[in-house]
Amino acid sequence: MIHNRRLRVAERRARTLDTARGVLQAMADGIRDPYEGYRDLYGIYLGSSGAAEELKSLFQLPGISPDGFIQVDDSFRRTVVAAAVDWLRENPARPVV
Image 1 (cartoon, helix red, strand yellow):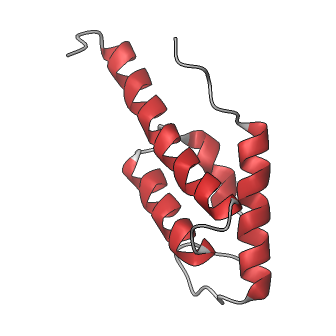
Image 2 (cartoon, one colour):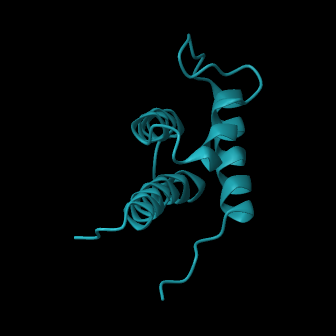
């Protein structure tokens, strides 16, 4: 167990982002339904208590409110998958040392 608080927080944040990265990659690859993946990502984000600020942009997409009514149509799917691809490109996985 890590006794240094900063290291524990950093490790938890890294695990959270790795989990989110897996969901995003599955959506980008067409393996995961965009709606289900989006809901899972939102749960990951809320569960991180703000530690995963990098995910916040995914929940500020135009016309999509993660806490409100979501019209799941082709436009929603395209928007969410495009956001997943963009996020993965802008936030590449860090190599494990």
